[in-house]
Amino acid sequence: MAAANSLATAFLGAATAAAAMAEPFRANRTSNSTASPAFGFRVCQRGVAFVGSWRGAVRRSPRCEVQVDIQDKAAASISAIEQFKKISADRYMKERSSIAVIGLSVHTAPVEMREKLAVPEAQWPRAVGELCSLTHIEEAAVLSTCNRMEIYVVALSWHRGIREVTEWMSKISGIPASELRQHLFMLRDGDATRHLFEVSAGLDSLVLGEGQILAQVKQVVRVGQVSGGLGKNIDRMFKDAITAGKRVRSETNIASGAVSVSSAAVELALMKLPKPHCGSARMLVIGAGKMGKLVIKHLAAKGCKKVVVVNRSVERVEAIRDELKDIEIIYRPFSQMHSCAAEADVVFTTTASETPLFLKEHVQVLPTVSEDVGGVRLFVDISVPRNVGSCVANHEHARVYNVDDLKEVVEANKEDRLRKAMEAQALITQELKRFEAWRDSLETVPTIKKLRSYADRIRASELEKCLQKVGEDALTKKMRKAIDELSTGIVNKLLHGPLQHLRCDGSDSRTLDETLGNMHALNRMFNLHTDQKAILEQKIKAKVGKTQR
Image 1: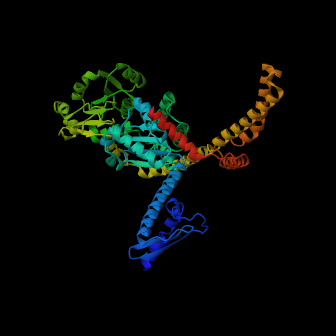
Image 2 (image 1 turned 30 degrees about the horizontal axis):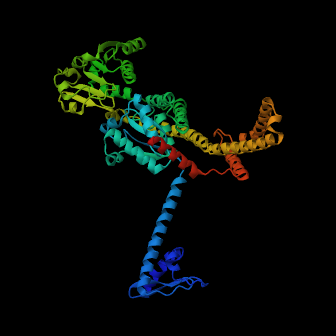
Image 3 (image 1 turned 120 degrees about the vertical axis):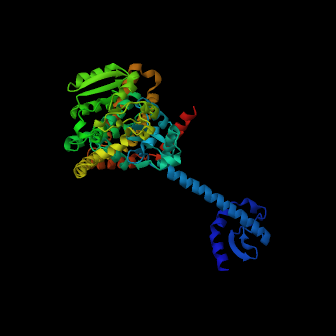
């Protein structure tokens, strides 16, 4: 009995909701009845049954009562579902756009996975275009290097946006999303921004403080400016990240003693060679791009006097030769790559080739190197995708090292690097506060637009009334123009003060607080409150419409 009473209480709300469904009961209503509805529950052999009257309705049999009870439950269930949908939709629509980063790096994923996700610089604009076409992605940028593949987005919905980006990454790489998620990291808003600042400063690099990553972050901005793919949030975040990277390097000693990936590759090769014969080892560099040039530069700094460079064109090699006078640089065309490898003790590969340049069958036919240099030919592959197939590592007279193996080089001086990193974090925090203050200042933009629109509507309405009173024929074209300019000038001068107090560059937190206070005051005075839900719905509808066209 107690359980039945509890169940009855639970269904009381459903019964109340059923009152709105008056149609099933109106057939039993007397025309002159004024009785108020009365509802209740009673326990019978069939369970809990609805009982009561609807303005004089006749009492039903237990069978009818059970039937009505089922109808009530169904109505209550439908009502609950609709209410849940509404709550979910409201919560989704009220969600603020988020800055997010989703990606993987040398710290989270092996090179085999990173090379499948690598996006060449020439394809960055296309990738950004595809990402921005996703329903819940408003802005995007791609940072793809040998050590990381990171996608920065402004998502209209955090969960939906992350899911769409993950599915896109799975699609371009051919890696199942379930497998990809095991290696991905995802950061949001302040954490995402801090991560980019740390990346730009070299704090997240395999080699702490290396300078090459800052140049790569700059290149993202350059490519975005040319293609027009960067939105205002991503553009400002990357520019502030560049500022943070510069400050860290100039105001701390983080770059002193630190090396780039290219420098670490040279140091690794020299570590593996017998020390007495490091200077006599025959060096071959394949590729004369940025990475290849840095390898040659660091070889020269380590005392190497001669290097053979294989490249598709001679122009880049000549430019490097003109710049580096302390090392003899011998150019060979790409067609002679394997014959040059036969005469080299150490082979550095630095090209952007998407297919391996060296496989096991290529290495098997190469002559064995001298015992003076260890009797093993070294392949140092700092390219992603890799230029040297993993199968080469199985050859007894060859050793293959890729970017993941550079960790061995950077193990020294950990305490010194940690101290420098702490100094750098303080600077990054300062730049992060500036960026977040700037982003908060964007909240005033809708108010500025609404206030301007509100004033323009009043001006246009009053101007039209004035012209109607004066008469169409009473004014010349010149007089009409003068009156219009007069009304516009009055509005602009009246709005100048309020709008000035709504503008803030975000550099001063005190000024920002005052600006936001002014914004809230104007919103109250002129009823300018922005419907974020409507704005978000409009953005998503526009993106869906563009996709369907």
